[in-house]
Image (tube, rainbow, N blue to C red; front, side):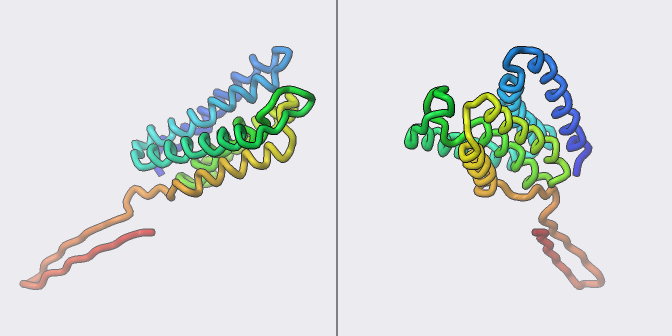
Length: 182
């Protein structure tokens, strides 16, 4: 793994420290969850770009777009009222599906240890939606499943060197080798 992967925890920590300002407001937890909605996909895309991982960037984009289409399609189709008369289109939670898609992308593409801060941010964002009385547990669970499922459909494990072709000669003998790492 390249040294750029170690930047992710610092990006996440920077974003979390910025939550302190949001927490000072009346609806601080909800505002912090809104920041998580933007921060999680930005962090995931930043990692792919720092890795110069064009395939990963494309996989993230496909997963993100699919996730948004399914989430907002279900919101419009189901039209479940939000708890405490806070509006409509509660099912599934868009904040949760977006943040869990970003966290699971980092997990599947680059490894679990790099995704721990992102999963913490996704969990906090999901909590913020319940705390703000915008969603119930089913909305959150569905959002997480849709977000993680979107990643599973489009994302493969990152491999810098997965194919190797070798050629060797010795006293008129020729040897060609091909190695593919799964």
